Image 1: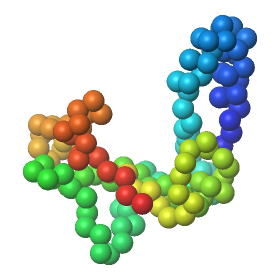
Image 2 (image 1 turned 30 degrees about the horizontal axis):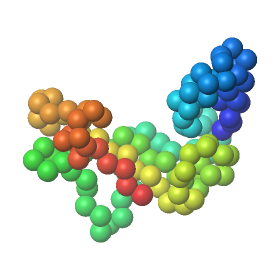
Image 3 (image 1 turned 135 degrees about the vertical axis):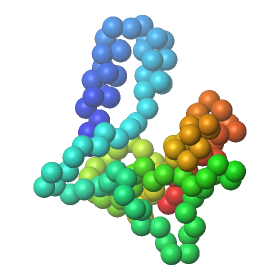
Image 4 (image 1 turned 90 degrees about the vertical axis):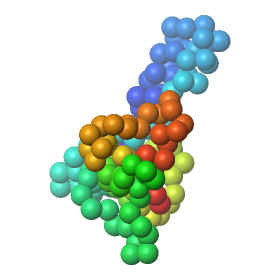
Length: 126
């Protein structure tokens, strides 16, 4: 993981924009992760499949709609070892991402970030 693209955008903004506009534009940049196929390297996560839920943890579901689908798992220790992402992440454990995908109710209900009532249809567990 590297900050080179963000640093390049930061430098470009200061070169082409007024100081006020550059500061406002840079404030819109957010840290993030770009995941790529591990090949023979160390994997930090995986897409889909069965998550490693603790035995005493029930499968997440959206009340009145059904179970959530497992999207991906990220190994926090492996992410930390891979380098500074700029994100505030736990140093250990696994992040499990779930989403209600609408398959069980013929797409009758979907999760929309702009609709607070649909937020229970998504979950991140640590």
